[in-house]
Image (tube, rainbow, N blue to C red; front, side):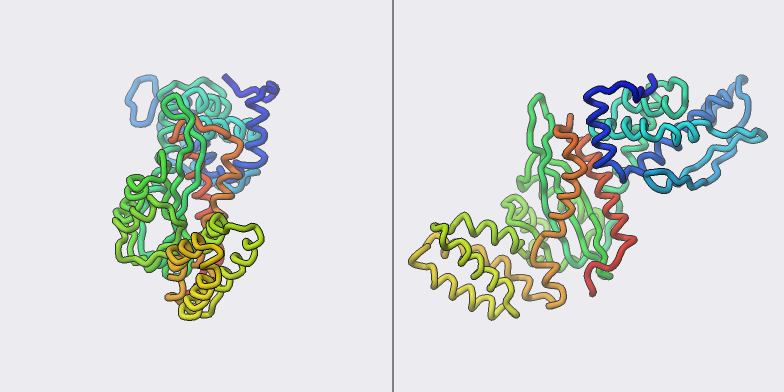
Length: 385
């Protein structure tokens, strides 16, 4: 069942696109697959499974030796299986590095289509050079998913600022194609570093889903939040009120500016209204912002009464940021940091077009977010605190 590069099928063409645009950050997945393949090869070499007692055994496992391998997808931290009294060295490692292009295609398909026995078998057989059992394949898939899940449920600590947002991916569910909501949380810790705190795929952005997501963050240890930044999703606002009732909320000014245009009755007024709102948002303090908002409401009260009613009800929700340090406001007044994350996720998932189930969607999105999160930890401080 070796993966054949010579078959120029439509699927392989799609996977070529995945390889070129969306899966350069799958180093951790490669490490898992390589390590599992080498374990399988050692078991075949000594003719016994780990801890198995049998007369046919030809040697004994003797732990692992760490090795860092440079590949085109980055450095791989591998564990080379050792055999007592033998010069055993896994050929699957050398074969895998030689066949890295084929493995990228197979692994990409596995992530997009969901981890199936057939697809994982294609990878492990390409590495090992021999057929593997369905139970061995299932074990490799299980370890891969466990690694991603462990990151999703890792303990959390104190975070001063919490950003929340959602994006949608097309997913097949119950024989129908639906827009599945991907809920994402980002936090800024007391040292000013950004962290991806959590991700969850849900059937919608209704309150019940946001509430479960936020409750999970709390159960994992999230505390110390001083401000929540998000757009005005109805379900999110209700869930925030239930889980974080005393935490101030900053409505995203960027989205509010866009929403305002839908309430402007004349095309000729759009630029003027947008400028008036920018003046409110860019005010030096809350007092001045509220004064400018009052002037704008008075200015358009007769000409656009529905607009002024909307402004009076909604714009104050975007002024919470004035209660926080001036040096922080530029980073806190919008949910744009999460918008940039969503763009990167979209760049990676666009080649899938349609996920076969919510689990496969969450698998790929998690892998992308882990990569972003780790880059942040190695980078500069985002906000001086």
